[in-house]
Image (tube, rainbow, N blue to C red; front, side):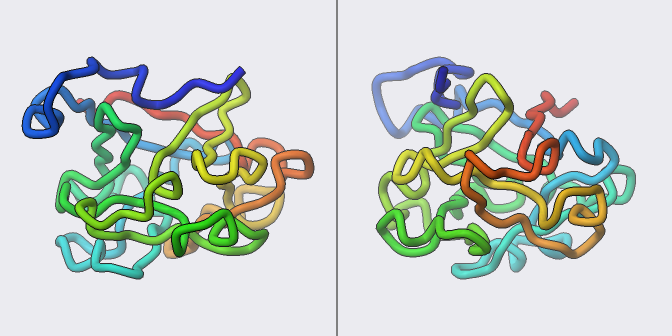
Length: 172
């Protein structure tokens, strides 16, 4: 069963009111609950076009760069820069090939289905463009979630266990 992440928030009628009903989360891999996914650095610079998210110690995470906003469309952005959305590279399923990292884009020009995220019953994060490719930490242990490492796409059929299972925890 696939769950569109947007089902976790209220659906609203206009794009102007989407952020008013967005939810804020910390995101981490089940392989290591102490390492949160976030943008590089502690400012909006870490969310510039083409930059990849990285893992941070949740205790030392860079504030709003490690708080994710999920809007009613299934777009993920950081609180530090909600105008930049996370998505697979390019505008086709090719951006989710094994070993590729997701990157930030302008939400206004995001790559369509490559920037719409789904969470399935197993905790796998996929894009609408290619639901057979899961986002995960590199490798098959908590080593893949060390500070500064970026998550990558894997085949969901051969994904590395808990490294490709995610938890979205409401931020306080």
